[in-house]
Image: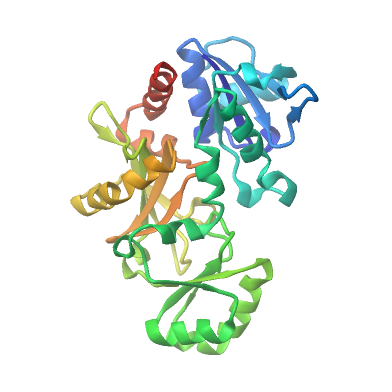
Length: 327
C-alpha cells in the first residue's frame, strides 16, 4: 500500500503523536509512507494532483521518535503523483492552521477521492465538522446544553439560566481560551466574552460537574470503540489545581481509563453517525454522562492508551486501513 499522510508542519510535530505511531506501524507492515503538509499539493493543467512529500529511509524504526528524527533529517523528498497513492490520511488540524491552509487538505482530498484514492477521514465529513458546531448535530441527550452566539446579552441570560457555564471559542482547540463562569464571576463575564469573541463565535455550555475530575478520551474506529486484543483504546485526563482544563499542556495528568457502560452507550449512540460521515478514526471526550467534544481531525493519544493498556492500538488502525483497501 502506498500511504500518504497530510499533517500540519513536519518540523514542529511531536514525536509521540498518533500520526507517527501510525506511520511506524504501516512501515512495519511493509507499506510505503509519504508525509506531506497543507501547502504541499499541486493541481496540474492536465488534471493530475501532485504533492511535494518526504519519506523516511527504509528501516526498522522502534519508536515514533526515531521515525520522526529520520523524517526530519534523512528523508528523501520530492514530487509524487498523489493520484497514484492508494490511501491518504488527513491528519492536519485546521484550528492551528493559517486561514489559507485550513481547507486545502480537504479540497485536494476531495479531488483525490474522486480519482479513486481512499481518503480518511472523509474530506466531506471533515468539512462539515470544521468547528464545535459538529457536536450539535448529535442527540441532545449525549451533549451539554449549549448556546452558540456572539451576543453578550444572550450569553448573560444563558448564564443566569444555567448557573455555572463554560465559555470557549467556536474554533478553539486543546483547551485554549476556555473559561468557567460561576455566579460569583458575573461581574467579569463581559470581559470574558469580549476576549473569547475576538476570534469569532462564542460557545456557552452547560457546566458538567463531572468535568471537575477530568475527562476520558475513548477512541472510535469505523463507528465503534477501538478495541485490540481485548483492550479498549482510552485514557483519562485529570485536572490539576483550579485549571478547568485537563489537557496535558494545561498541566493535566494521565490515568488509566475505566470505560463503563455509560461511556459505551454514548459510543453506541454517536457511532452510526460518525461512520455515516466517514469518520474512520475519532476521539470522544467524555465527562460523566455527556460528550464534551468529538475530535475528528487529528485525534491523538493512542500512545497514552497504549501506555496503560500495554497493546499497540496503531496496529489495529493500520489493519483496518488494509481492510479498506480490499473493499
